[in-house]
Image (cartoon, rainbow, N blue to C red; front, side):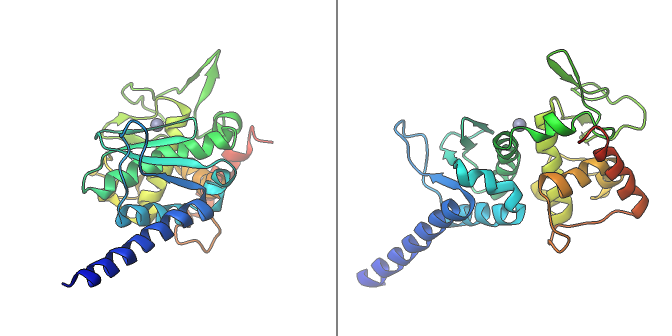
Length: 249
Ligand SMILES: [Zn+2]
């Protein structure tokens, strides 16, 4: 390949990169960070940028709107492992070639971010609704059957994963709820471990309808024609709506 064709191709690639970075910022309030003073952040590739862009678009306006006022700084750490959100910064540990890592960590941590930017509506307005099961005792949130203990028998709505419960606090509960909601409506099971693979993909819709209706109608506020909108049988919808309406003014 001649040198000028190579230059032409690389400048076209660069243009795509810049365009996607700019639209993530302008459309979704997501500020892509590609370098930092410590040299921990690394540049993003086009597949990674597009994954975040597609995901933000599908999560919808209710989800990303707070970032438009207060940008979410998103960076990939060259050091692998986990991710975290705090003070407007969302870190994703080096995902290597596995885009599903990037996707899972983004969904989980950006949910924390969106919830926090909106003033924690889940904790403040919904946690004590029946079906969501959380209650506050003094300074701590407690859940009658979760928080790392083996599930207690009963009619709880919960998010059991790999035979243990992951919801150790309301914020984690919400982040997992969104992850499971998206996983089940997008049929992306392989991208969303850990989850109970011995169960049918939609089993959590049966066990935890209030959680799914909460994500659909309150946290994401998806319109009825959204690709991810899914309805439940009328009696189940009515029960979830009644759960969410009680305690909530
Ligand atoms: Zn978390």
